[in-house]
Length: 161
Image 1 (cartoon, one colour):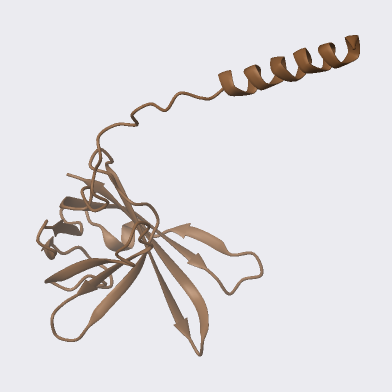
Image 2 (image 1 turned 180 degrees about the horizontal axis):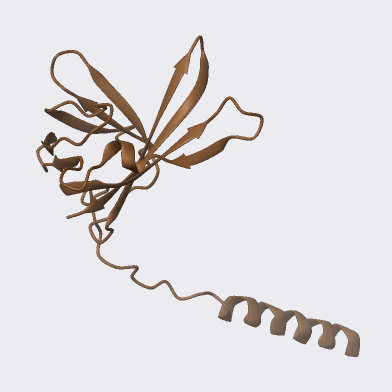
């Protein structure tokens, strides 16, 4: 009889401790749309190139090829889904002059940014990060391939103006 009472009390004690240890659910803050951080003016800050054909991929800074002391690439993303290049820097042009932009997939976790210049040419960049409204950095990656094999990746870092 004593063991039954002790076992029952022990089971009750465990049940109360499990029930009382529920974490409190707190508000996590104000809700923001996923694209709230994209609109704005972005100036190219750094460019690195990664050689993907080497046994161990090697990355080098190529910022000097895309920037001069007087000019740098500046992109303006608008809330209505349009973009424009307000200043063209030196180096290859991956961005066009203007057009529309979209995140892909559009759902909760986009992984790509698609720039469409309106003439049937679109460029898809992999997102290095998804900028929030408070973030000052945007990272885009563009990979070139030939014969089905990736051979170089451009890593663009833009800073919010």
